[in-house]
Length: 206
Ligand SMILES: [Zn+2]
Ligand SMILES: [Zn+2]
Image 1 (tube, rainbow, N blue to C red):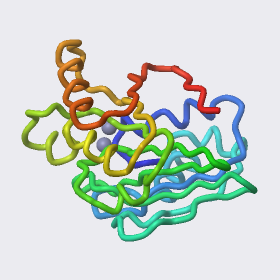
Image 2 (cartoon, rainbow, N blue to C red):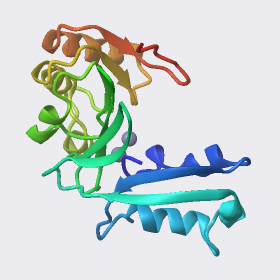
Image 3 (cartoon, rainbow, N blue to C red):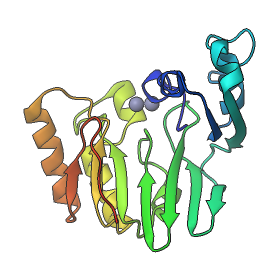
């Protein structure tokens, strides 16, 4: 889990229904305003929770990741496959970005963030695929601008990290002209290939 804004977390019970699953669940530590991944999961799936109907169908372990962005946390590893996470700046919301390395191949997920912490660029250094969230426009102001990186900042981060390919997801605008403008600003700041994601799109990274 990256963070507990509803657009990033509300779907998990539906994905687990009806078959249940055995899994490891990583996510941010809590704050005054947001639950930790552990308290969030318990509030959903344990007795008395909103989806306690799933309790007997789930077998999961929990890992809380520090969200201050100061250090990289190892989430999981199995042979050539490794998953790491780091806190990213998203206003007052504890938020984690993730990186998956498999042999020589790597994919990173920015999560919602405003791009103000250099440690993320180091974290995704030389990644093959960088999945970004384009929730803000170049001229966004207020809460949107404080929570979300502008297209130029995404481009600068992709360039600074030497990302091999950028996948644009979490597209907030429904205006094609606005999206086109955002993509051209991104392209002015990043010279590599860009894919615009859509729901259920699969990208073959082999
Ligand atoms: Zn968010
Ligand atoms: Zn979001």
